[in-house]
Figure 1 (cartoon, helix red, strand yellow):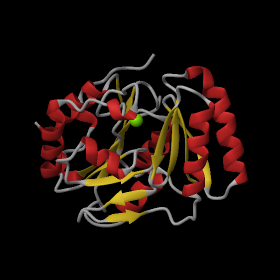
Figure 2: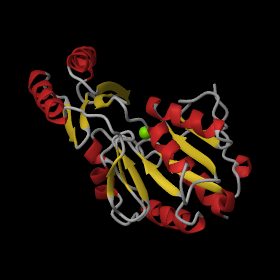
Figure 3: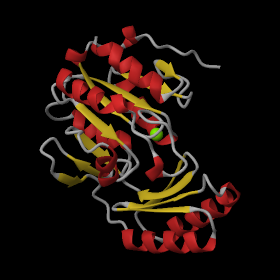
Length: 247
Ligand SMILES: [Mg+2]
């Protein structure tokens, strides 16, 4: 049982903060398929206002590829970190590959296509930095897909298995959300500000830990992080908290 806390008094004022936000399950409800996500009408305006209030010290931090975030949030002009920290669209709109390790992306794509053929009903998502298998619509294959992913990750170099909501993913071993945020925090415009991170998934927990250790605040959605500073129950509650915070 966690406490639902919609009070923003724990948050540093926007003038002293920087903000890192997961997308699926944090800003928008999780959909049956990644493409099926519905972006609430108030989200674009909220992100715009956050960008202004924070002087650009805001980044979306997603397991999706940057191009997928751009499809769903075409008006967002801030920084986007994609592929669990493997790639970034920086404040100038330039694509940067963050993770320096060599990964066999083509091999991961081949593997994912084969899994898609072998296990009917699973969804195959090819990313610039890896591949994901979604089994929300075929949950009976979860164990088989996980085992197959583990075997493939063992056999190849530079790829790690990443668990998320009803999906198993191969991502670059050296990429994660926490290290991507850490590198952003070393430079302008983020350095010296208190980081706030909001997330709802296992992949978000190290990023939350990093922000707390850096004197910032972790916002946990749906109880993913029991020792986060703020516990919220839904993306709607996250959006409401951020809106209240701007005043
Ligand atoms: Mg999420």
